[in-house]
Length: 302
Length: 223
Image (cartoon, rainbow over all chains, first blue to last red):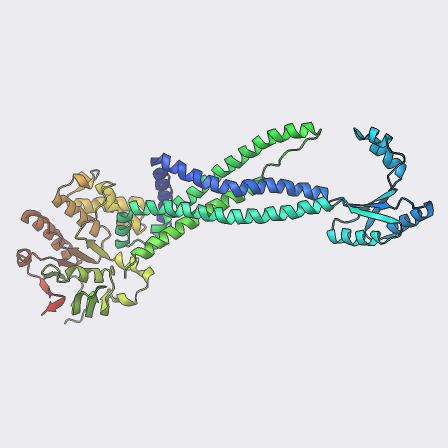
């Protein structure tokens, strides 16, 4: 057991020493892995920001119900009663055509337009707040309200949220595809790096096998090499993504200031960062496993 | 035949290489524990192939090779390393590693088999002492003479205290004095109970020792 631990320590030390002996090649390898891992991780980070945005926005889905211009007071009251009585509605707010006009007047540049109009073009409207953010509920209520008499038009204010949701689903699929492709690239990079290392040490490997080394013994240093490459590559990817987010946030702060708000991209959580590192280590390990196994198979006795 | 169990036993062993070359044909013999014997024959007679079969480096096409009572053709690949730990091999091409010291070359079999470092270092130095290389332990094998390199190979082969020592042309590139040195070492190991099988084409060398001789001729064992 002690000898086994000693060999693990020895393998790790030897591997680190080998990496340090060729710093240029090591740096390039680590960078290649880092860039390959940074792309999907970076896209994931930006995407998860939009996701939290869409989650916050869809908490309070609303329907705007516009009435026909000729709707009389009793008819308006009847519609209001039906709206309030519908299942899945949490609040109904009446916006009279006069109030809507006043509100519109506040918007910059609209005063002259409104002044030039002979009469108020706006209809009476209700803003209906739904009790849940289920798109099916919004669809059902939209249809139900459309069929009420004197209702001219129902607008689902959550439509843009749902469009964003669909876009995000597309983005998530893209991240999965990107991760799979670049994960493959990561395995390929470590596979080749390890293969090169194996070829420079093939005499030693052959000798070790002749004097009774098990496959596990032969594989061990290369597992360390692959995992370390993955780890360093993963760290490089994190550095790339974090500095990228920092730069983006600076520009975003300027942009948000112009719109009078403060928006910033959220940094990945420690959990997400550790998961990304572990994934890189696992892929490096896999590349090493495939590489050594292939060599052992090639050189196995006939 | 005595009643003792053979440590190496070949029964009707044949080996054909891809391409049809028949290196060994129906070879049978047994070696008893503690025996020392020579394997001889012309170049290409099958000496190296025979040693490779015993060390499970190659697999026989027919017949049975038994080492320590284990049938090698029935051996799982995962069991082969443990078989080889009982064997000391002196290879024709030496196979020394020139990226490390004399001492580290001898340490390798001990590290491969998982000996604790301190105990391994003690045994490596003892083996180097036995072949007269203890003073050179820090040197690179490149700096050694041909005879010294061969002695280093012997030290590496015996450091794990194997039951069987297989040597393939251990004196091929050495002059007579060095060759005698190596053979004296083999005899000494044999005297402490190691089974020694030496493949050589040097008939003069064989003549100096009164040991059993197996002669191969075009893959067949002459009786």
